[in-house]
Image 1 (tube, rainbow, N blue to C red):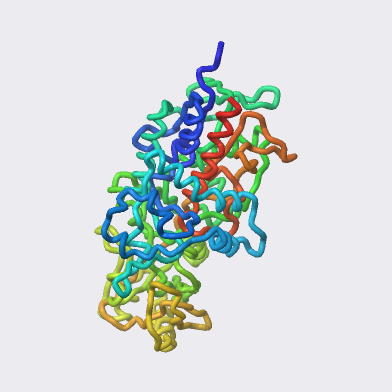
Image 2 (cartoon, rainbow, N blue to C red):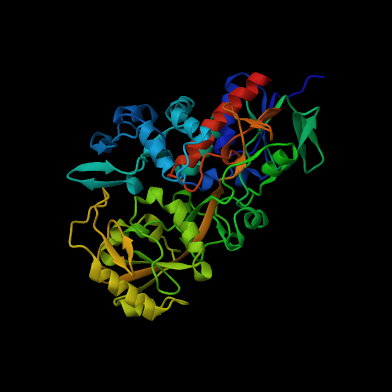
Amino acid sequence: MQNPWDVIIVGTGNAALTAGIAACEKGARVLMLEKAGADMAGGNTKYTAGAMRFAYDSSDALLPLLANPEDPRVARADFGTYTQDKFKTDLLGFNDGAPLTPEQEILVTQSYDTMVWLAGHGVTYDPIWARQSFEKDGKIIFWGGLTLAAENEGVGLFDMELAAFERLGGVVEYGAEFTDLVVKDGAVQGVTLADGRTVLAASVILACGGFESNADMRVDLIGPEWKAAKVRGTPHNTGDGLQAAWRAGAQKYGRFDGCHATPMDYFMKDFGNLDIPHGERKNYRKISYFLGVMVNEKGQRFVDEGIDFRNYTYAQFGRAVLQQPGQRAWQIFDAKVFDLLYAEYRFDDAHFVESDTLPGLLAQCDGLDAEAALATLEDYNASVQDTAFDPTIKDGKAAKSAGLAKSNWAQKLDQTPFRAFPVTGGITFTYGGVKVSDQAQVLDQNGDEIPGLFACGEMVGGVFLNGYPGGSGLTSGAVFGRLAGQAAAQLA
């Protein structure tokens, strides 16, 4: 009897849905299996701001992607350019001196074409007006190479991709927990589920995320300090797909000690929260540190808050916070930057203390060595260069305390009131995974393709090493998802 399915996809996030669209487009009969119920489907995608980094050569190249190209702001926006060479340079900046990996080359060279392809299936985007631009001389200037996010952010990306998948005939089954792969004579021929069923297909695409929601795997593969890390997204990314692939002989590949980790509200929930409106879902994130100063419990600064645009540092600074005493720090700002802080600092449940004096502020920060912190801030204030502040560029306005520089955007903390936001580290996704071919087919220990098995999204190792330029994760999921879906359908 003929199998009812050509392709089984495990997961329903951006990578899975992109794979599903690509496979259905090729005429495959596709079943998507999701561990969660419909309300919690979507993996980490729903928790994101929907930003996607991709190479483009001109502002005109963005127009086919926009949900509303007639928006009057578009005419006075300077989107700049973000060439493939620039994208590659940004990735190299996180490679610790290593050359680009094959996976990074694929990400860069196929990023724009994948965006256009998705737009052709009704997935459209808005400029990131609020978080990626500043107005200067009547122009809206975008910075950091990150310009567009899916319409209605991560929830919108999920909704648009799911609609495209179902329009093409794809089927989703919710509450279907994957447990293992069906392997016969070295080839993957289906999956087993927690309810005891076996579902067969010509090929399987694993797109069910990394291991960030599995505390034991975090400790084993990243380090002991990660046991207490908050999880920014879904509780369902527990490494099930990775462990099944490894049992089937897949090659472990990538930087397992690396992950995307962001400064978060110290009092956030242990996992992301889909119950709050999607536009506010990033309220736990606290990434405006480049406009102020961060100190640890000993009252010491521990990173160069202004070393680069926050797109290039926020995914690393969560780790830096987790490595501090008590796995906690405070972000300190004065009134002159309040209007520049991202919206999540102003949500009703954002935790902070406020005072008209720095000593009064620091005294309210439980667990902080207030005396040492005051000395740090006074040292910092005394060293701030008397040059122009310009958040649209790396302005070179520097300061330092105890020899640690703040390389850009340093302003004195001197305008009342002052605010301090307690933060910890929140893990978003992990970098280690499996090795895949240039068609997203999973490779074994010898570098040979495992027949019938493909992977995409967080499952793919080698895309990110010791860091992450913001917005690259969703793009990577889409690029490798498209490749996986096309190749799996061709195999069927």
